[in-house]
Image 1 (cartoon, helix red, strand yellow):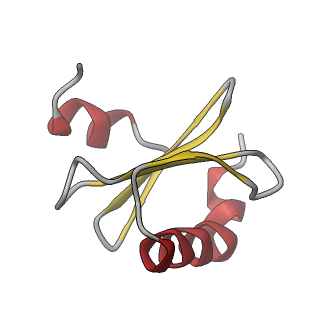
Image 2: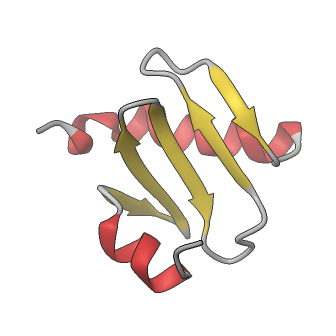
Amino acid sequence: MPDIKTIADEADIIVNGYAFTRKEDGIHVLNLNSPDKAVVFSEDGEVLETTMDDIEISIASTYLQQNLKYMED
């Protein structure tokens, strides 16, 4: 498993401690302050996998919606 620094370095964007990385299977989000909390969103924002609670998913989803334009190629 990659370490936190590697994940942060490879992230497309970092917003308030959440690293957002676009991959083939979706947009991976990791809470860098609590690395056991993660979520994978589909391109249209649907939750595919998660270890986050509903509140944290809502926060990560909001950050994604507000910053998706910065993840464009």
